[in-house]
Image (tube, rainbow, N blue to C red):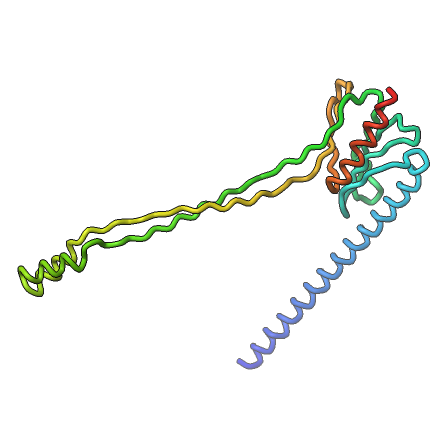
Length: 206
């Protein structure tokens, strides 16, 4: 019996060790993919910077979205990159600034209302009814009198609300019939306001 238990313990430790090795291998592979993506993104940014010096970037380790403004302030460009063995350009949309007819900020919010209801039941006239029943019928009458007392339930409700703000979106309207509106997620309201005025300032000469 002891030998069987020892064998099972040995096999259990072996499986645990093998699983740890697999976890470490997956973690190393993931770390290498992230490092490669970061390197690819850096090379991409260095390549486009001379022509597109103004940009906003959002996203994370698996993908990036860029909103760019050309050095002459006549063109916008929206690029979405994805992680892969090579840098994947998921979409690349150039926009002539002369086609932009509107630009605004949008932020949705969600309000959750939670209601809590409490109730209290009170018996009325318990002592009086018990006294009357006892006087008329003795101890049994007192019990009957108390039991027959009326009851009243009082309820109250309270509400608590919590509002969660959504992401700030830059909404750009154009005269392009294929892409009349596109939205870019901003990192903050300040970031959105900067790009709002940056694009409006570029539209002004037209």
